[in-house]
Image 1: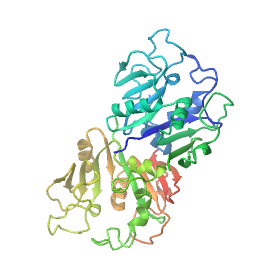
Image 2: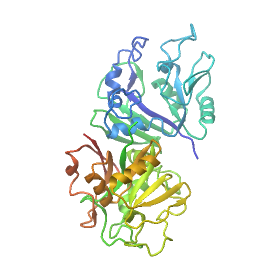
Image 3: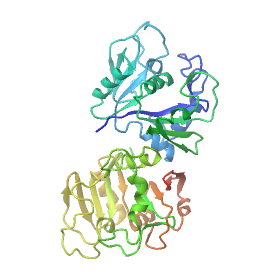
Image 4: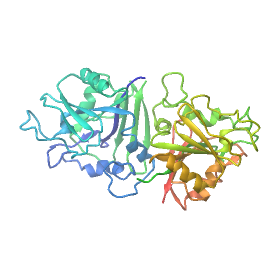
Length: 214
Length: 214
């Protein structure tokens, strides 16, 4: 069974940005409003951080409920893991997700500044300074036959696209413009030479973009 | 955690029939062509009976891959299990699905004619003569905290809708007319007093109908 590298539930603005400018601890998505970009997911019944019962069970819910389906590991960029840049000033930072991260698998954080692995609940974070194909080999081993999720941000996804390692992408395009920030694409058409594309508009306002290899 | 009763990947014609007239061993869907009604699912990468590699990974694939997701038991009507009607002439018939049925859970077959349970691979078939809410109670116990799938056919789904036991429905409506047979609905609008509805057209030609309780 082939193990895929899958981008899932990655949110971008209508002009292709996954996050805004000036990302910081106070504003992890920079000038972008994450509430607006992720509202489609937060409204669904399967959203992992849901605190009240209910939630929608339409098409958006299929995407939130597929997030963990047959995934055995995640690869993410250091800027998704942390608001810090450059060498670690301390190793106290353990990610944005509290004591119960939503990954439930090994997570490989790409960084020039390695640090010891640690475990929170059923998620173990590893820090690795290597090229995309070496990281993919490690993640594939750790995934135990399951697929690997490529978690972003935009620069990390572009790096793996450049190395031709990405098998499928699900990108949720929101009807908001950011004008600047961390860019995934100028246009989804950039990928059409290598991928099939289906676009699925949702009543929530986002348009789901589904890519798979030709 | 609430255990849902979910209809999934149930296929009907544009005029609402889940199967045609004159169902038999030779023609399990009667005068309907199952190839035409299920083509959308058979083309996807996650179709369980796929023998060649490849397959689409667009929106239709989300539905085929969700088929087993968090499902712990199935309830089906006797006419889905078997082409025979009335008392069993023999108990040799073990379903349409060969030695590896695609269910992988306990399956409860609603019938007036009970017979002993049997197991094929990781699927166990039970035969039960009871009203919908009693069957649902048994299936919920067997599902071990997971959801229960309501597998059809149309008459069985209607029976559970009448008993108000169905939480979500995914119905794939094909652009073919049957004119007669086993009917799910005159129109999907019949359910709008009790359910939200989203419709999602697919490039394959089917329109996915997603219902969840108001």
